[in-house]
Image (cartoon, rainbow, N blue to C red; front, top):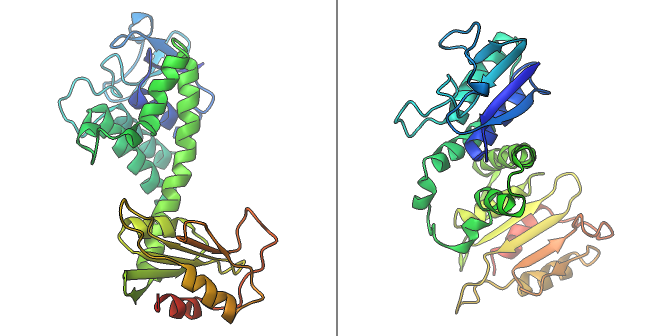
Length: 300
């Protein structure tokens, strides 16, 4: 039997390590997860055969990997290096084993997981206290806050914490892969344009994440045209306290006039103008090109 051992009440470093092994280490997807008091090993048994670098131990008839406990190769508590945690050690290990097995991961997949692991390492060394506006409520609306709340809701359910964490991390890979793709789209396909309110950016891409990411980069107005369905999404920066900012009403009126056959929807905030959405498949896409739409937006 293959067994992964970690400490009770697992944190994100322990959960991340288990996830990396079960997801990426060949042959370990169905490994059983067992829990020990922090710092200890499985039944405190000595391995019958092991090396100092190989995390797989033979204990009785079982293959066992300890993570984040027991001062084993995938436990970081024997070092003061704040750039290392059990998850980073596990990620280095499984990547090497994948190569040995003749398998490979895409560059985007490796980059996505590496970014996730970097955040786990930082939080395992409590660096979230240095995040921007660290004391504000929105930080509780994160995986850190969710796990803490989950433990309060279901105390002592270590296996459920692992299951919950694995589901979250599996989903998070897609989020990070999409972000990495969006970063490339912004760099390679983004079309800058000027408005009297500031710089805008337009895209013709399948990736909707470019809109939010470009806004985070400071663009006051962003527009995306879906090259497959022809749909268009236009977003202005949200209003701030005491300032209304850019209003898309004029763009709405002009685009309806230029292309009256298309379905245009102006959000009540006047900050979002839609032509087509998965929420309403009956909307008719515009025939206007991205360049045509940018010409309208430049006049705002």
